[in-house]
Amino acid sequence: MSDEPRSTSFRRSLWTLAILGVLTLPLVTPRIYASDEVQYFAYLRSLWFDRDVSFENEYQHFYNAGIAQGAGFHETFLERTTETGRRINFGTIGAPLLWSPFYAAANLWAQARYASGAKIATDGYSQPYIAAVAYGSAFYGWTALALTLLIIRRILGDARLGPVLAIWLGTPLIFYMLIAPPMAHACSAFAIALFIYVWLNARERWSARDLIALGAAAALMTMVREQDAFVAVGPALDWGWTVVRRWRARTPTVTASTATPTATETASAAAREDGVGRLLINGAIGAAAFFVCFLPQLACYLALNGYPGPSRLVGRKMNWMTPHAGGVLLSPEHGLLFWSPLIVLSLAGLALLTLSRDARVPTRPPADAVAPDAAPPDAAHAVLAPAARRWIGVCLLAIVAAEVYVAGSVESWTVAGAFGQRRFVGLSVVFSIGLAALWLRTRTPIHRALVGVLAALCIWWNIGLMAQFGLGLMDRQRLTLRANAYHTFVTIPRLLPDLMRRYVFERRSFYRTPAAPAAAPGRGDVRPQ
Image (cartoon, rainbow, N blue to C red; front, side, top):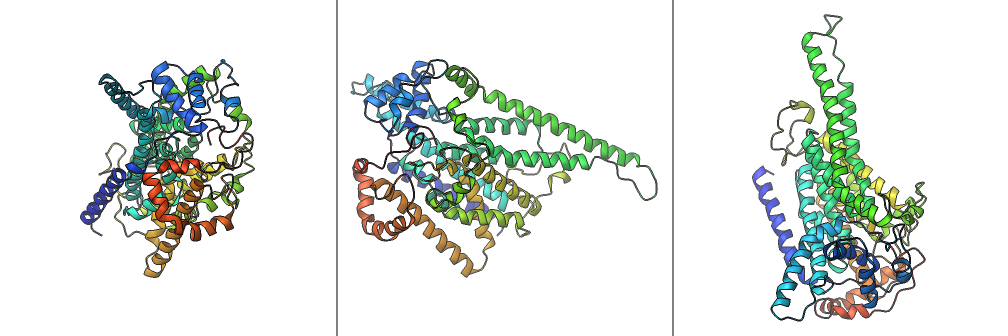
């Protein structure tokens, strides 16, 4: 495909995402109902109105309103205190920071309505404020998908919308954008997509400016969800391998005619050695940028816990020998690949990406072929060379492995009571890349039809599980595959027209579903997952 049709198709895909974002606004659920959402919202409301990180009034408000009365909420958040005497908050400041522009707009709107005589509270708790957070999450989710398209075009040269929408529909991302948006997961998807987008641009030169941007993006990503700091393993590998290659190349090449290097060869080697030094200095600058941008979270930690780190209760739940890594992926009751089988196709695509020798798409010269001080040509739109694509595939698989490692290290690895293995929602961009790579590698009609059918079944599985989760047809603490399959492919199709009508026009009817079995201690509705 020539550049012009490809560019037109790409713009059409972006417009399609924008239109879908607008059309799905009525499907966003502006509601807070669980402790995780209360904790993130409490950060935003307390900082905005009280200018502190004392959350007792926020917790008491939601408890009295009957919103946060799950197992253990009162004991955990209204009885226990931190080392500084404040109430516990396991959340972080990143998502509240991202929501703050929407919250500010809601505050102005509520005050204007109140000034005009409307009976509306301007205390930060009323419906406009909650709706602002919900729609903010939906916005960041759609922005993550747009960034994903840019990233796929950069890596593969052909950004098809289908794989991106498939990941949206076939994983818990859609749930946390539309049904439970006050969680931090849609913001996590955005922050990681932004970080990977900045990385792909930074790796062209690893300049100080690029690494400052990468450090800032890493700080935002970590402030949204602490575990997302492990995503940095991909760019760290990339930067470290660049340092190693340039270090190895620093020795002057000895010509056949002389036992000593020529002056030109010596100068070239000195330039390469100087390049290694610049890489190390720029890396330190990037680390400093991360630290500076992470200071707001460190300040919150210090005020809340008395030291610059998360609650010690979190540390006690961690076993860094990651005893549950296998279960996180493969447990039939809780595993990622059983909750979201579409990710099996994505991982296959990432594996194929690491083996790809396809040179069909236009490429730019490798970074090492560009003069150190020369600006890369059209870096924002250039497609990676085949060798670079393979290496990026390795780095992306390392990111997935790092997230599996940390998820398997948590005592509450099952995320029982939550919809899906939600700790992986932030990796939506990585899974989209893998699915797009798989689609591009399946060139025959029969293979593409097979991939399409499998993807459609996986999408319906996810939709069926969402319906069962909302209707109380499933045990929210675990999958029961036989019953889940029956309801997904037999019960839900029969109920679908009525379910759609209720979701659009009588959504509150879903809030009266039978209560799920009580969560095990330390899981479910007590701390962020």
